[in-house]
Image (cartoon, rainbow, N blue to C red):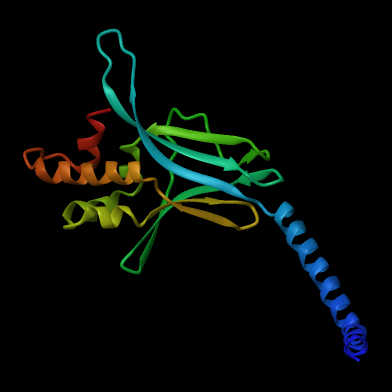
Length: 198
């Protein structure tokens, strides 16, 4: 009797199970299709200590490196790079400015698996987010403000990839803000103060 009931239950459930299987197959197929067609980028803005070789000496400098890697399965066009801050529910946008001697231009295409890097002095970031950095100088805990800074990359489709700047770059900005605040003897502006070191 139990065997008969079990067989009847399986027979009655077969269409439902078949429908669930078909739906699952469609959803999985749609997921992978979307995954392979979507643009996926790894974005990072960090800083590292480097040494510029000179005939007389090798001064240490802080180099900011913006890395954009295509981790998707289709070419990606980069049309815009900018900074975004979101501190205490106030969002601000700041343009990324290529240095005068930079050969980099936008838009730029990255093939799948490829990577591009933009390098400049870390102090250049201060000029990019000038008004925000001034607030960091006067704020009691500048490290909290540094954590809210994001590097943003925009594609032609309007998709924007946002990532918080690396801790090394956060640390640089915090130390720069504290250094400028402590050095009250310097009467120059913020930008002139940091450009003197480069």
